[in-house]
Length: 322
Image 1 (cartoon, rainbow, N blue to C red):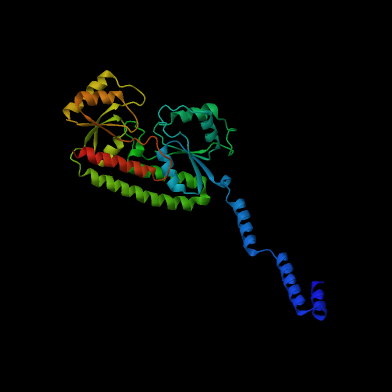
Image 2: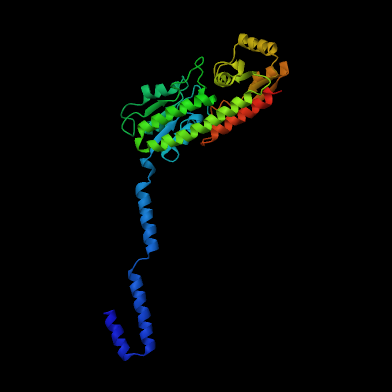
């Protein structure tokens, strides 16, 4: 019909009228054909909504900040990783909340430190969660990151040695690959790259410690046995041998005698924590107080573990070279 009108117009109308009709014809045709730019945008948007849903990602729950850091470096964006303990809350004698129980019930993989650190988890599995409580059809795969670590005196602070951290990363990688073989290559590649970084951190600590004038130290928290063992340091005493317990008078007397006998000039406390017993000993024996981070709590981002371990190393360099 439109073509017929144009032919008729050539016979009966002026040249100007024909030109105007041709322009109108072009506009009508363009309106009937969608703009390819918007068609591409809409198809990508629809495709994205259909394929990139986070609900399809592996749900991973870690218990403490170091494990979150290890796990996030392995998964990248291939899995959803969440940490159980709130920032600033330590794992010793932790009291679970109803929200924590829900998080556990929704996880497909649960990564724990082991060595008795998370005894409160056992109570959850045995007393509060039945087989029908889990949103993914069964209990999560529980990965004990301490498998293969040589444990000292049942001390759970295994992550404070990068050499142990490498073992933990390997255990976490294997658990993720078992739970999510579809992304196994991603986990394997990311873990290998992260282990190389941890090996660099290991060399950095080893080279630094060799230059220290002193190797003996006293800490508030008995947490640095693995660091001392692996790098030639000597934690000669700790004020608090058992978390959340006040030291006995006899133990305190022994610590003071060791400090005097070893001519210790510095005592290590913890960041953001004030310990009256540390302040008292430091005042009475004229000791300086510095902070060493046990890394039990902290910020949740992939590089956090390396950042905090290097911060500890800087403190050790300053203090043990005096």
